[in-house]
Each structure stands twice: as structure tokens, then as C-alpha cells.
Length: 145
Image (cartoon, helix red, strand yellow):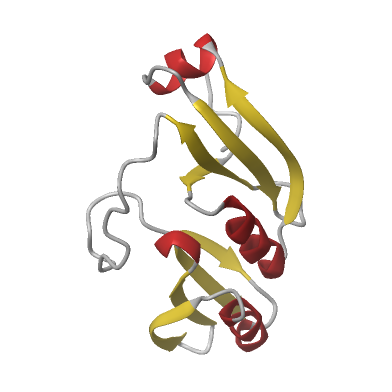
């Protein structure tokens, strides 16, 4: 048995519309929206009474997807830490390759994004930075030369 592919990465958000707008500005395409609920959803995530709105976003090449989810029930658990440092244990960022790092940052700032640290240049191969998006989502951006 071999792994076929990575299907998607799921991110729980508080403001689904803002998260969709942010990732559309980044260049992702809204593939579809739905409401998820029922016994199968409860079984899958290990919660009772699951009902959430989801938006599936895909990259322009169609190979990668983000599933953005806004829980309606059970209620989302608190805000949690939104400004944790990069060395916090657990999943904390999604990385995207972009054509123009400066332009991308400028466009995402209109959606509340803030660069964490500075833009770094690694051996004239790649410019890279991390930023915070909606609901504190840690997003990495890289521009290869």
C-alpha cells in the first residue's frame, strides 16, 4: 500500500468569508462550499452534533487544497493563542510559492495580513517570509529566483 497524495489541509476559522477572501487574494480558487453535518461527520471528528460550513480552496495548478471550516456546533473552542511563535509544537503554517513576493504581501495586507519578522533572502535562491492571516493563520510565502 502506498500513499496516493496529500488531499487537503483543514483549518478551522472564525470568519469563513474573510478567510475565503484572503486565500482568493493569494490566488487560490474557491472550488465549492457546503454545510457538513450528520452521524458520519460526528464519527469522523469525534464530536457530537457537528454542523459546520466549509469552503474548499484549490491552488491554480489544482494539486493542493485547503478546507476552511467554520463550526456552528459544537461551538468553536475559544480563540486560542493567535500569536504563538514559530517554534510552538504542532502544525502552525501553510507555505505557498508565489511569483512576486512584494506584490502578494501588499495585496494580503488589505486583508489584515502582517509580516512576522522580515523578508529573508536565502543564498540568492529564494526570498521567504511568514505572515499572519485571518484568525491568526500562519502563512509562509516564497519567491524562487
